[in-house]
Image (cartoon, rainbow, N blue to C red; front, side, top):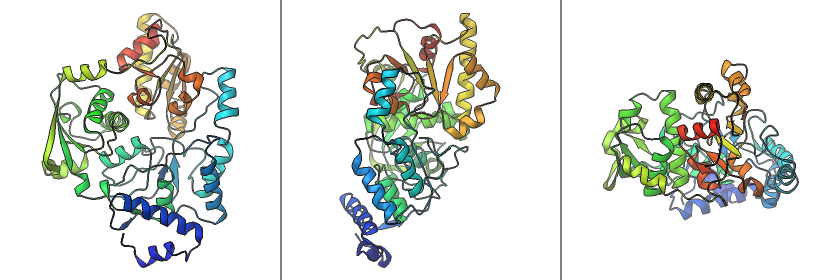
Length: 426
């Protein structure tokens, strides 16, 4: 890899041994993927994936101490994925004991480390949807980022037109510390070309989570160019379209490894370049109603009892937007009223960034959810489900990401709503 004199000096240790190790790590990372040079990080803020003080991750805590002691901190403030705990989320004493005493035992001290290295805010800096306006970490088109968190990376690349590879934890921090990242993959024009053409031929707007799942499992880490979806979403990136693409992208990134997609007539690069984005020899995948039904029917049910009565429902992985929260409040309220019920039959948690929650509290919709027995939390459902006792619970969700990484069982929005309202065995 070609390094600038400034970068070579860092590698040679002229700014200290710790920073030299950071640079060496990034050089090795770039060499692995054939990068020929580093490029400057131009995004105003970073985003880290490691939000959890999982007690066994001693190497990470030691590394953070070394960075802090050497004065090696991020050149830019950063946000980080959601916290793993919230006392307001339904649990039981044994689960709480395992979570606090055996799992996230370093949470408080780790958050202090994050703050020392560059966390923007301990109050509002924790979310997987850092790009929401309320959170304030929204990169501009063309910005080079040093982020991790698959759902955030795919959103930034696709919906916002920024440029970021699917980095791992710590690599995201190292790029923010150096202010440089290796140039390869999705940072290059060639790497952003679509190697798959997806033709949507459904009779109605496809469920975002199932469509993303289908595409992710087909293309894996490649770049899809999706035709026909704009017929359902329109040609304007309004909040409704952004919310749809947020959930669609998260499913494609978790059910596969998609880091960038193009939606014909809608996403920035597709609007500007059209089918010039499609690489020569691109493969084609046609998605119709039958294909989506086939995909959904093949999701495994890994509950010990497939007919168990759900004990908990999670909505919001990735985190819900303010508009989604309000929409869910009204849909749930209407469904409960129609069923002649006062509260949800299944304990339900809706998750959102703390910055969004602050705006949501005090609204009529917040009062509706509280009256109907719903908890609105900033928690990370994935981290909650890491508790072995939670993993044994029959949990339901409308998140394909949560379904993929945990034992939670997927239901489409309307199906989930029916389960939450009526309860009973699946």
